Each structure stands twice: as structure tokens, then as C-alpha cells.
Length: 330
Ligand code: ADP
Ligand code: NA
Image (cartoon, rainbow, N blue to C red; front, side):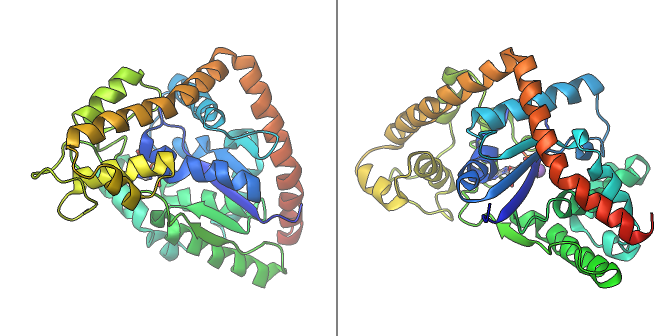
């Protein structure tokens, strides 16, 4: 195929994806499989950089894969695999560890933030070298573009630097990737506190729409979303962050532009927007949920799909690792 190669990963987290994950990332993945040669990975190696329960991790990995399939990833049109099933990731990561400067790794702001939250004693070396594993994830596939959020830009820059360093020292080997920043991406805010993003770790249960929740639970959360003083429905993230967030979600799920929505709701009250949005969300979520539960109900088939994905991934990754090993002198 002459389509550009993309690679993206998502961590297996316990429980359901939320609406922010879908609109901010997964939806783009689904779209990119039509235009790109797309590799998508559930990055379970990254998940053990913080303490994990083995049973939960195994379950979360399956759950993440089932949700990606439920959201529309098609194993015929993309390569979906679990990172730990492709041992070349860990193998290349070691080589990349030896090409990455301690100083440059120390400048990664995500590490600084995460380790500051955990404290030095419970921060692992794995968390420190997390961006180096990410370098291996990307370079193993000669990915030209890496769809990521803005917060990952620094890691892609590091990947580029290390790829160029390797190419300079050992001869051209790696494709130097570009970030594919998901700019048009809707950023979704917490329904109860629209000053923070909807987030698994930061949102209260009422502030977050979990895609696998019962429809009536999601509908209730939307109906009780905080709005703003005044009654007018208009898009104004500064003064009306709550209402604007609801409009963003509505627009993202229906494809109707925000200005059109504002016209549609002219003269109506917040309640009308919420009621209709609750319908939009639950109608969207119903088939997603049904498909995801179907995959979860047939673990053998899910495992088979993931094994096929891992084989496809290894077919690309193994020769790249072999070339690297040869070039470094193994
Ligand atoms: P969380 O913040 O809930 O822990 P993650 O950090 O695991 O979510 O994010 C997984 C993906 O979902 C990332 O690509 C991230 O950019 C995207 N994402 C997460 N929350 C949001 C949000 N509120 N709006 C848009 N995209 C989001
Ligand atoms: Na996060």
C-alpha cells in the first residue's frame, strides 16, 4: 500500500472509555484506517510503569481492544494488536535506551508531572523510560505520522531526535516520524466542572460520560450537567463553558456545525438542549455498547483477532529489529 503509515497507542485503563477518549482519539483512529496504513496498539507494557493488578490488567487490555473494535476499528482495514504480544517493542526499547541521553529524557514534562505526583520513592525507572519505549513503538513500524494529542508533542520530538541520531551513527534505518496533532479534535470538558477536561482520573462520576454505562445513566448525567447563568444557548467557551461543552459534544456526534446548532436552539431553554443531547449520546452509544459487549462475550474470538493483529505487526517489526541488531553489532 502507498498510504502513509500511522501508529498510535492507547493504554488499557480499567473500565469504560469516556466520551473524551472517543471524540478526542478513538474516532480519529477509526477515520484514519480509511486513508492510512494504520497500526493501533493497546500498550499494556506502558501500563505497568505504575503498579498494576495482574488480573485487572489482563481484563483492561481485553476491554480496551473490545471497545476499539466496538467503536469501529476493523481488523481487515487496520492492524490492531496488544503491545506485549510483539516482543520487538521491548527489545528495540533497550537499544533506544542506550541512544537516549539521560538529560534529554529528564526534560520530559510528562515524567516530571507524573513523578512529582507519585513521589520519588514510588516512581519507577520504567516511568522514566516510558518515552523511550514509545520511541520503539513508533520506529518499529516506520510510522510516518503519529496521531497524538498536543500533550504528546514533546515525546514525538524526542522520537525524531533519537531516530536521526541512530540514522546518523549507523546509516539510514528509521523513518523520522511527524506528529499528526489531532487539532480539530473536540476537547471535551467535565459535565460538572467545565474548567477541567473530562478525565478518568480527575472527573467526578457525575462529570464523566462512560461509553459502556446504561443509556439512562448517561442521559441523567447530561440532564444534570452544570450550565451557566442566563438562558441563551450560544457558543461562548469563556462565559458559557458548560453550554459550549454540550454544543461541542452535540456537534461532534452529529456532524452538525455549532453555528447551525445555535440557530436550531434559538429561543429554547437549556433543558431542550440537554434533553436532545441525551438522546444523541444514548443513540450513538447503543450500537457501540452492543458491539463491545458482543466482543467481550466471545473472548476466544477476541483473542483470535488480537493474535492475527500481533502476527501482522510482527511481520513488520521483526525485520526492522533484525536490521537494528545487525547494525549495532549483535
Ligand atoms: P484520561 O485523561 O481520562 O486518563 P487518557 O489520558 O488515557 O484519558 O487519554 C486517552 C486518549 O483520549 C488521549 O489521546 C487523549 O488525548 C484523549 N482524551 C482524554 N480525555 C479527553 C478529553 N476530555 N477530550 C478530548 N480528548 C481526550
Ligand atoms: Na490523562
